[in-house]
Image (tube, helix red, strand yellow):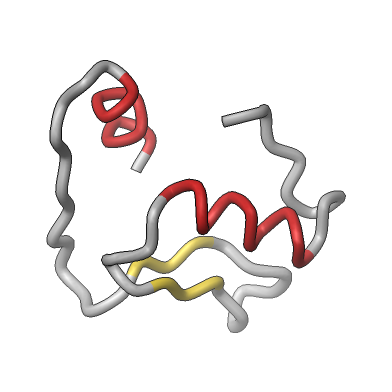
Length: 62
């Protein structure tokens, strides 16, 4: 995902098809991942994680 983020910021059109049906990011517990549809933008994921728990997801500004 980070490579896609960097490439898209540099003007490349980037799409991911992965091996599963959703994007899964670590959650508050191993059995509680954050699950997103492949159509979810990085900004939407970022804002969702911040909304859920700013301390658990201390990220730099996008």
